[in-house]
Structures are given as structure tokens and as C-alpha cells.
Image 1 (cartoon, rainbow, N blue to C red):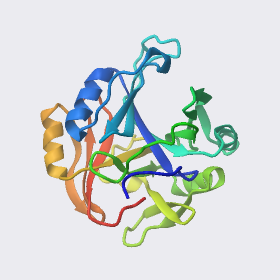
Image 2: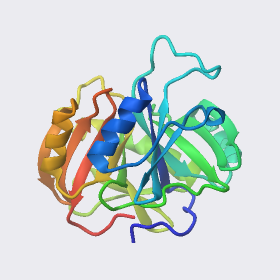
Image 3: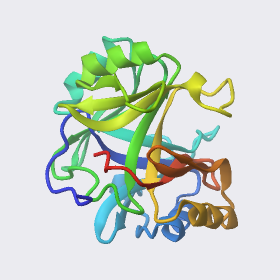
Image 4: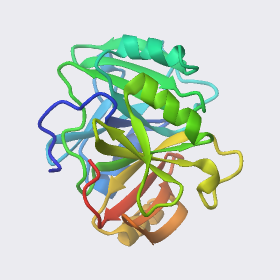
Length: 268
């Protein structure tokens, strides 16, 4: 079911957010593309915008800023971040740094909503950790306008498999019918995917390891057309694959994401 009514199991993608130079422009863009509703948040949250779909939280959008509220110089890249659920963020962060990962943003409380950190794996892929308190994460998934899949594209699948198994209990197994692609599983349930950067057609050789967020759509081609009209870029034109029809896109400020009209079973 697309509505999430219980807590996310540790290791499961539970939230995504975007950091951009122009927050209002991003809010307008994703409202028009996916039907999200959201506005700049209060100062005590750094203006963080909680976007909703049909009244349920679906993603966050925040302005790029330094911890003191000043504008970064140089401006960091515009990126979507995948957050993995953690039972204990502090213990998980410690396990990550003990397993050749790095801390980008140390563990901290987000009011009474939860506790978070931003880290990277040994191959350089950046992701977030979320320990839920009042806010469990996305309230809707796997339906048009919500995230449906989170994919680790890595320079070393063996190193990544070992790391995520040791630190978050995520196990990787070859996905049937998809040569070179791995299912990421939590407690026997597939929650995401993984593949080697070298297996991705058209990816620049200097591309770093990264997590890619997929959003579900009703019609991949019409979504791509709407994105182009709004000033976005098409990195990989719509194509058919085993799970449906997908495309890899870039918003007007540089944020990369994928869209898919899924034809197979719901992945999570």
C-alpha cells in the first residue's frame, strides 16, 4: 500500500530531501511537476520546507546555507539525499566511521521530530540517517509523486555490500533477470537496488558513487516533457526496462533524480 502507517525498519529508505540555492524556485518546480504542496518553513528549522502529497509528507526541500545561516561560498551542488532509518543514529554513525565511512553532518536532534546525521560510505556515496521520534518519515510512497525506489550507484559493489551489511543490516543479492544489478534487502524485504557505476550507460567516467532517488509517475514521457518546458534537463531519455518505463532527469538547479512508471510489483 502507498500509505505508510508504521515505523520504517532500520536500513529502509524512509525520507528524501533536496538542498538548493533557490528554495522557492524548487518548491514551485516540484509543485508543478509532482503536485507537491509546501512552503518555506519557520526560522527555527532553518526554513526547511516539508512537502506533502494529498496531505501526507513526501519530501523535504531546503535552502543551501552554512550552520550560522549565511550563504555558502562556493555554493554546494544541488543534490537529493536518501535517508535510511536507524534505530540509534549515534551508534550507527559510530559503526559507519569504524567501517571506513565518514561523517558529513554529525548526529543531532531535529526538535522533537527525530535525530539525524549525514554520512558517506567507503566508496564516497553520501546518505542520511534518520532515527524517528515524532516524525517517522515519508507518509506516502510508491504512488505517483512519491518516491518509489532508492538506488546505490557505486564504484565498488563488494565494498558497499560489506559496509551496508555491517552497519545497517542491509544485505545485497543479485536481482533475478537483471544482470549486474543487486537487490538491497532488509529482513528479507527488498527496499532498494545497487549497481556498479561502470554498468551505467552514458555516465561520465568521473561520476562519483551516489544514491539516486526514483519518483513514481503516471506517464514518464509526459513528465519529461513538463520538466523540459520548466527548464530541466534530460540526462537519460525515457526507456523501457524490466520494472517499467523510466528516465533520469535534472531539475533547473542541477538536482538529479529518476522517474518511473512502474509495471512490476511494488518494491517496498
